[in-house]
Length: 481
Image (cartoon, rainbow, N blue to C red; front, top):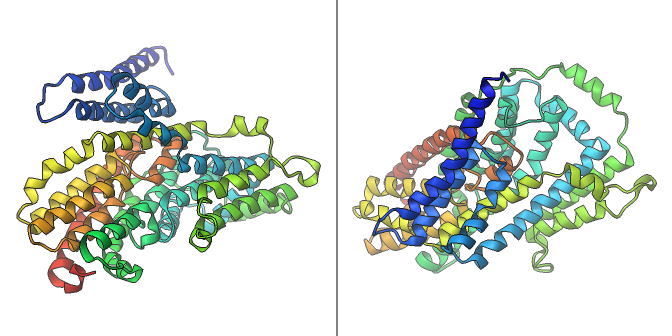
């Protein structure tokens, strides 16, 4: 960097650093009668965190602590409801998964997995992006997107490190590959009820507020599959052309990577243990419904934690599989605090009524039903899903959707199906969904995710509105449960 460029960069960094808290204080001081003190503070905090996450004047993890500092200082939300976000189950899941993949790094398993990935998927970078997107999309139809992201993204990062890409923020390819997995988990999330907590919440609301009887999983798949396919198609096509990696092909041929893999020799005992423990943790997480009645508290987070603890205990070949001294220097601590900050921000928006305020402000525009109502509720859901996590967005928007259209003597089910599908489409911010949060924690370029995520949101929302409205008009079964 030249001598002239450094002061300019420092100046921009200073401006971005000051812009966040200034925006917060401006929102705090605005004399808007319709906005309570709590709502003004919450919107100010949202702007502050979004600005710092995108411009990165400080580390992403530092921004993650802003909810605690601002809430404790300005007292606009119950701190007791915000603090647990920093020790939530998903934080334990990410920490434990990071221990297990750090074990890979210690014994070279990450290199072996990277070579196998390059051999299996190919060295063309566009093909790599699409392949990882498809993998994330398919798995998220049956598994919670955070778990899919937490298990798949470390494999992608291992491959990137093998080919020499360490700083994902500065690498178009690194950012594109990690975002591809994250977006894939969002795009496929509505296909089945097993796609995550937002879907199960919708099932509960339909059963309690609309039908009064069980909403079958098969019914879900039949109703949601056309909507999910629309999201998958448009996002797949968008991902194909949205990212322009700095390289078009990973250096080296398939034969070269096969030779490199053979040169590693057979897997060591330590590699086998590292692979097995990660596999057992993943299996326990994915098969949770089979044993939940016997071990109700043994959620995926603690399955991963149990296997991570084993790493520090066993001694294959006479040496500890993992030591704390090695782990603490290699783990991605910022990932945990960034994810926690996003979760805390979502709780602030919910607890202060900010998300509800945004929702209520748009309700009058949907009073006539029809296409206008579909568009209004679709846009509302898109906004809420990007600024708070998708589970919170569904918890807010689905009850509002049901009560609004029931009060208008309209069948709420088509609207519920549409907003739930859109509620799974978290693309722009770390707060949107588990996949983008995990991706952000690995250091991808958040400006890229925000800008390109905006267009992904626009395309997916448009596709769902068109397909959903057409289904409501021409397929009578779409309006039933």
